[in-house]
Structure formats: C-alpha cells, structure tokens
Length: 164
Image (tube, rainbow, N blue to C red; front, side, top):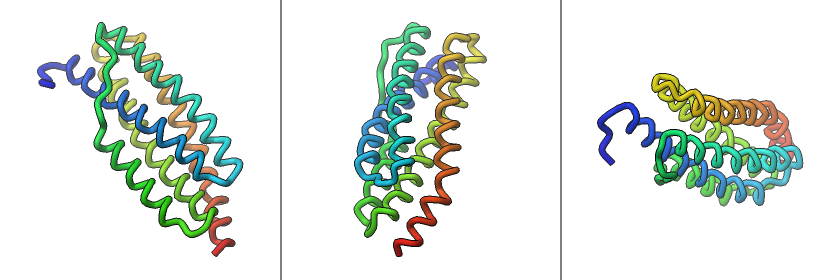
C-alpha cells in the first residue's frame, strides 16, 4: 500500500491498529483461560468487553474517513502475542503464569497507547474531530487498563514469590 500523503499514512496506521486490536482480542481470551487470580481475570473480562467496543469504534473511524474497514496483520502485535504464548508454556506454577499474563497485558496496553496517540495527532491535524473523539475513548480505556494492570503487579509478584 503506497503512502503518499497524511491521510494515507493515517489509514495505514488505522488498518494496522484495527488488525492489532483483533489479534489482541483473541489473545486476551487465551490470557483469560491461563489466568487464575480472580482480580486479574476480572480485569481481563472487562478489557475484553472494552476491546470489542474499541474495534467497533475503529470501524466507525474508517467510515468517517470515507474508507472501507480493513485490517492488516501487525507484526508487532504478532510478536507480543507469540512472546506471551511462549512464556505461558514455560510457567511452572499458576502464580508465575498470572504474573506473565499481567506482564503480557501491560506490554499490549503500552503498544496500543502509542498507536492511539499517533492516530489522534493525525486525526487532529486533518480536522477529523469525530475520529479524534472515538480514538480518545479507546485511548482512555487503554490507559486505565494499563494503570490497573500495573497496580496489580506487586500483589501478583508477591503471590508468585510465596509459591516458589
């Protein structure tokens, strides 16, 4: 896909993020299956629901830009998912796996935060306020999830240390 102008760059980034959100949505289902800590599982369930809405919001952004919804495979997302899956297989105890799930989710959230921030700048520059609003909604959810994961990390690490 040639990128000759700011709108094409924006649509390219949007299609990568749309693809990544879908990849991460599937991975979050696996993380939910791997997790045993109830607080972590609750956080994952909530974020899965938010991710479904985020994908819908991205679809609306495509429409506002006069574009057909299309996702591209994100190699960065694929790498994050693959790394997480490998780590889950290596975990020898449930509390260790929970910390690995939290770590993986935190990495995903920070990747998504960076993507949303870049898209917001592009949408602002193009005067696409509707897109800005939808992207900001998604960004706020990602930031909140990242904060909650980071706040749960010390407890999860403490539990994993007690299990060792």
